[in-house]
Amino acid sequence: DAGVIQSPRHEVTEMGQEVTLRCKPISGHDYLFWYRQTMMRGLELLIYFNNNVPIDDSGMPEDRFSAKMPNASFSTLKIQPSEPRDSAVYFCASSFSWGTDTTLNYGYTFGSGTRLTVV
Amino acid sequence: AQSVTQLGSHVSVSEGALVLLRCNYSSSVPPYLFWYVQYPNQGLQLLLKYTTGATLVKGINGFEAEFKKSETSFHLTKPSAHMSDAAEYFCAVSPAPAIYNQGGKLIFGQGTELSVKP
Image (cartoon, rainbow over all chains, first blue to last red; front, side, top):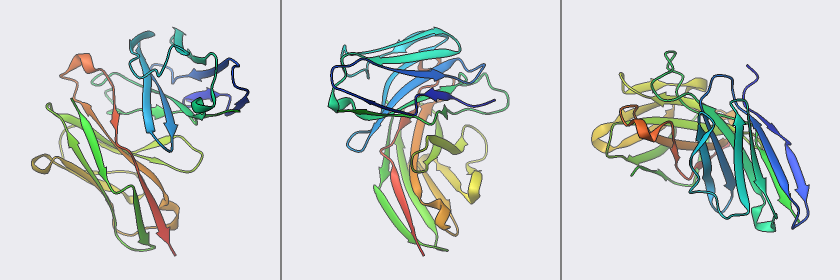
């Protein structure tokens, strides 16, 4: 498996523009998570999905942020309009439900992240 | 509610010295515990995990951690540091599967940056 795939790796955009980050989870994983990482706030969980359904979006900072998972192999995180304070590295991670992986492979697999810079 | 505290945002050791990164957790239910490592400009990689069974778990790159329920700790150790161990390390906790409605959600600590001096 190629792992969790995120695109783009780097994104530079101007304030006010729409930004879309993409994630392809590992095949068979039924959980998908979006995290944001900054020096000031560390790793923040934004939203997570189970079987394509959003379970907890309490970490989404504002209405400018939205996330979708139209199918088991694809998710997007959208920021519209973007602001300089949104500059961060955004990670996607996927996992099996706890208790369903008989190979004891619990734990997230992270993508390489998207480094977003809003100028 | 669960939480994780990593003691020390930055730890510096000499090459060949013992590495000890501290993690304490708070959980009202049996926890699953994890250590992740993040190298510069990369995502997080799973180092090791405790789910059930033996409380001393071994991971990749010579790291190990011991689950101590009485101390609510899960400290990460390595007998001899290598330069390549320089990275940021994250401890994380999740409820065991018995709490179904928590799913697979992990709570991460703030991270500890490990520096290794020649």
